[in-house]
Image 1 (spheres, rainbow, N blue to C red):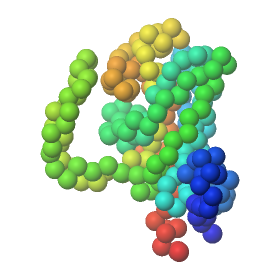
Image 2: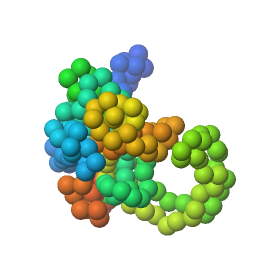
Image 3: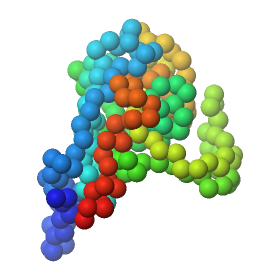
Amino acid sequence: MRKQLMTLAVPAVLTLFTAVSPLLADDDDQVKFNMVVSGGAKACLPHASGNVRITDYGTVQVMDVSVQGLPPNTDFDFFVLQVPKAPFGLAWYQGDIQTDKNGKGRVQVRGIFSIETFTVAPGPAPAPVVFGGPFPDASVNPPFNPIQMYHLGLWFDDPADAAKAGCPASVTPFNGAHNAGIQVLNTSNFADDQGPLRKLDTTAAAAGK
C-alpha cells in the first residue's frame, strides 16, 4: 500500500521535518540500481561506480545517489538524460556532488523520477541568453512532442579536474555555466529505451488506488 505524506498538527514541530520523510516509504515503493563508469573515463577512473535508490511518495520521488572511486575533494554535476551516452539527447541538470577525501560523495534530489519523467516543448518561445563560452545559450527552443527521459549521468564540473585525474580535458556543456569536463558515470548498463527510471511505474500504482 502506498504511503501518504505525514501532516503534523503542531506548527512548531513542522520546522523539524522536511516535506518528505524517508521513514514513510514501503519497500514496494523503491527501485535500486547501479551507475557504471563511462567509456571515456574507464582508463583513468576504472573503479568509479554509483548506487541509486529512488523512493516514491505518491506526489513526488526522492532520488538518493552515492558515488565512490572518484578523485577526492572534487566537484561533479548530476543529470537526468534521454540516453546515457553521446549524443545524450535531452539532459536535465539535477544537482552537484562533491567528493570527500576518500573519493566518495552523495546527493539527494526530489522531483519526478519514474516512468512519468519527460520534457515537452509545445512550441518555440524566447529563451534568456545568460551564458556564452564554448556552448552558448540558445535564444529560442525548438518545438517537440513529449520525450521520456530515464537515464542518469555524472560529469566532472571542471575539465582541469579531469586532467588532474589523468582523464581527457575535453570541455562539455554539462554544468550550470556550460563549461564542464567529461562524463564519468552513467546508466549504460541499461538499454537506451529501458533506462532505470522507467522501472518505477507510478501510473500503475495510481490506477490501483
